[in-house]
Length: 186
Image (cartoon, one colour):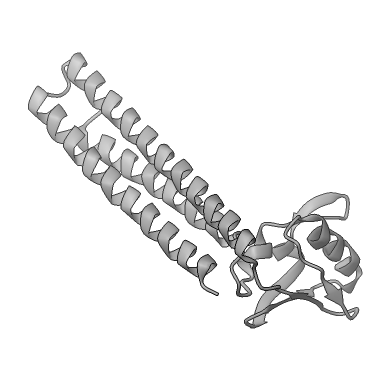
């Protein structure tokens, strides 16, 4: 496998790891309303679990409220049940057409738990990025052993993979710090 292919594959996989982390952060509650909090919910409707986005439009018209507008009013009870069963600590209020979710202020204890969860997710993302680095280095070593790459090219490839690793770990770190600051602000 040529050096360019190894680097391209490593970069794509590292970006995917960072994107997975970015997506995971949207589900973490802050003190403000964010439609991303309920985006990952699945609602048991029509006999199968369906993403809430497929059943309703979700918005945050106010800083402390999320509004869910079902496309089919018949699904409103199912959506309410899914929100209550989600473990997010929300108590949805329905008027028969829309569901309003008041976002309570986070206590200091909950903020610490959220911060710890962010750190866990960030470390998982860093581990995934390092695993990509390991795989890329193995591919470079395999090419060198097979005679497809010189020793200098192998070293250069590994150095570039390390640069990609630092870059993507930095992205994950920045995302984690930003989200943690959001969670910890009162």
